[in-house]
Amino acid sequence: MTLLYGVDPRTGERLEPGVPETTADEVAAFGVAAADAARPLAELPLPERAALLEAVADALEASADELVRLADAETALGRTRLSGEMERTTGQLRLLAGEARSDGFQRDTDEPGFVRALLPIGPVAVYAASNFPFAFSVAGGDTASAWAAGCPVIVKAHPGHPRTSVRTAEVIAGALAEAGAPGGTFAIVHGLEAGLALIEDPHIKAAGFTGSVRGGRALFDAAVSRPDPIPFYGELGSINPVFVTPSAVAARGEEIARGYVGSFTLGSGQFCTKPGLLFLPDGHGLDAVLAEAVASVEAPSLLTPRIADAFRTGVERLTAGTRTVAESAGAHLVAVTAGDFAGRPELTEECFGPASVIVEYASEEELRAAAAAVPGSLTATLHAEPSDADLARGLVAELSRHAGRVVYNGWPTGVAVNRAMHHGGPWPATTGPLHTSVGTAAIRRFQIPVTFQGLPGELLPPSVG
Image (cartoon, rainbow, N blue to C red; front, side, top):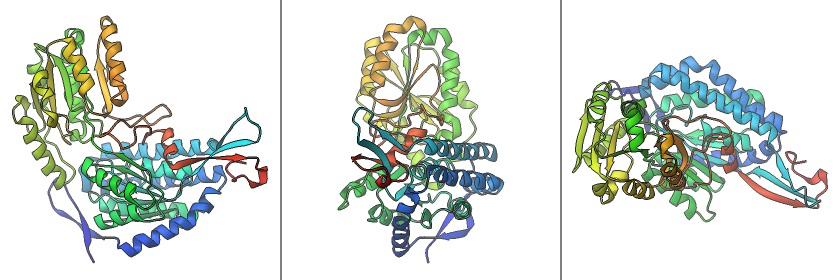
C-alpha cells in the first residue's frame, strides 16, 4: 500500500500518519455509487437539498478548531488566516444553500406550454487546490456549488494537505448521513493515479479544478478526449496585471507602491489573484519606496517543497535580463522597459509566490499597447485619477476583454463571495471564461438546460413542477 504524507513547511518534517492512495477499483466503485445517488439527490425537494449544505456548514464549524490545527501543521498558513478561511467556507456553503432554495427553473411566459428547466448534470469530480485547504478544497466552492445544483461529488484531495482532507471528508460524510443524503452523495480519493482514473470514469459528467496550468491542461485534455467528452472547469494560471497612470503616481504614488507590495506578497504570494505585473510610467521615482516595502516582508512559508522548487525556478526566469528593484528574504521585484517586455513572453507567465515584475512605459500609446497584449487573467486593476477619464475609459474597455474582474483604485488579492462575483477569465486563467468558480453563479456550471414542451405538471421533475 502506497501512503501519502503531509510535510510541515516550517521544518520540512514528514507528518504522520500517512494517507493511503486510492486504487483504480475504489475510484470505479465511488463512480458507481455517485451515479446511483444522482437521481435521488436531484429529486430531493429544494429545501431538503439546501439543508444538506447547511448541515455540512454546521458540522465544519463544530470541528473548526481541530481542522484548523491540522491545516496549519500541513500548510503553515497560520491559525488566524485559516480560521478566516473556514468562516468563508461555511459562509459560501450557506450562501449557495440559500440559492438552491430559490433556484429551480425558468418558465417561458411568452410561449404557453413550454418550461425551461435547469437540471443537475450528474456526478462531478472536484480537484482540490493547494493554497486554500478549506475554501477551494474538499468542502470548497466547487463542491458546494455542485451540491447546490443537485450533483453528487467525488473530490480528488490535494497532496499538500492529505490529513486535513481526510478529516474534513469524515466530518462531511457524517453530516450528510445524519441529514439523510443519499448514499454516494460524497466521496474522496487520494493520489495522482486516482485523479487520472477519476477524470476518465464514465459516471463523471463534469469536473472542477484549481491548480497549475500544466496539471489543469493535462486533465482538460483527458476530459475532452473521453469517448463522451465532459465539461472541465479549470482555474489555471493568472498574471493579474496592474496599470497605473502618471496622474495616479503624481497624486498617490507612495501609497500605490506600498499597496502593491502588500498585495503581491499577501499570503506569501500564493493567491490566484496575486498581481504579477505592475505598469508604471518612466521616471516614476518609486524605487526607494518599493525597496523599503519589500525589505519589510518576512520570509515566506511556501506550501509544499514542490511549490518552493517551482518558485526558485520562477525567480531565476524573472531576474534573467531584468533590473532588480528590490530583493529580500521575503520577496523579489524586478523591472523591465515596455519595449523589452514586448519581446519577453516568459515574463507574462505566473510565478506562484512573492515575486513580481514592473513594466515601465514611456507614453500612453505604450500603456494602451501593453493592455492589449497581456494574457487572459482572473483580474486586471487600474489606478487612475478623475482627470484620466478618457484614458481610463479606453483601458477599462480593453481590460474587460482580458480579465473576468476589473478593479479600479483597489487591489485584486482576495475574492468576495456574493451574487455579483465573477472569478474567471480567458485562457490561461481558466478553461471556460463564461463561468465563475466563486459566487452564486458557480452553480450554473453543473446544471444543464432542458425544455419541456406540453408536459403535464405531474411529469415534470420535482424541482421544476
